[in-house]
Image 1 (cartoon, rainbow over the protein chains, first blue to last red):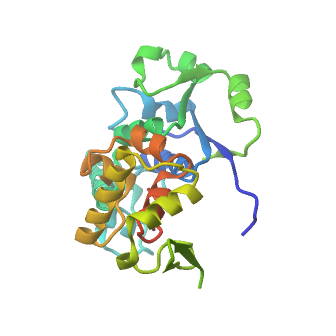
Image 2 (image 1 turned 45 degrees about the vertical axis):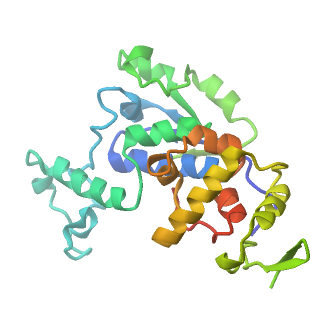
Length: 169
Length: 105
């Protein structure tokens, strides 16, 4: 273990699936728990996690997700058995897989996305939305949850991130 | 094994610097560890967190998470970070004489 402590971390979230967003929330929150400064920058589909109407509707990708297997969404089948994409296309399957995953997370005391974002914000972590992606998706500040601290350009994000590592998830 | 002496009483610490035996804990230990963690004086707010953590640990056998402190203990996350800056869960657990929290959240 190195003696030098990481003091600050900035995390970029560009995906809007459940499995695309959670790692960043866990790492950002974990950074604050260790007394580190934490910024999370949401861009492209990552913005779904900040959208008032979408924040609790994120789902696991069940189509074109080659890492998904029959064990992963806690179906208790072998991990070597791939999840057939054709199944994933059926209505409700993605929601069902997401529901299974959310249940498992709740057991581990991992909060739902909206509560998690509030927790990070209360912990002093900075939640930021990408201006360019907002313009592209025709989103306004009012569309996003109150915990969002600011809408930033790439340049402003780099200014915020100065002095610490940047993680792209 | 590391140890710390407060008011002539010696407390054994585990490898992470947390109290080895929860039953050894007393308020003087809490005050001494708090000072070490940069908290000069334990206020009513601090004791509220410490007492809740200790009683929850006695009930459940696990160090409560920040989420549990809020939901079950009624301690707002903002307050927790203000009371125990730079690592509230670990600091509060250490002062409360509990083991190092194991979870990621």
